[in-house]
Image (cartoon, rainbow, N blue to C red):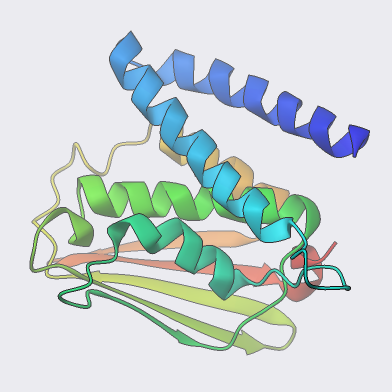
Length: 191
């Protein structure tokens, strides 16, 4: 427990430092940092055992996706679809993947498919040859400008998260949204 808490404080200190460097002002910094901490809290909640369960909790990639995307789900009209297989997710990989998915969701909500009422997000998951492939496809998104494609703190955080699980991430900008492919070896998700 001591080791886990110490790791969380180290991660939090790193987020503070990186967020402050990329921030245009204290209000922006506070909002972005609070949002990242909430994403980590949702991910951490997935690792907590159920009081009624005897075994360790089974956290999965889909459970994390659902927790991260929950604030963007509209009850009246489905605009987010998650399809395909699932994979276990534990340890350091959970933190890395949580930060990555949070950045993708934040970008979709600020600039992409989740920023307007007509946008759609489909996430397809497949496992092949020991590798999890996630295809994050935004459609009916507002036309992206070079400003929304610029590299900033979010890009740095994404690269660190992907590196943390020894994965790869590729973006393909399309006329009505972005397609993002993440590939991670299953062994990296449980190690």
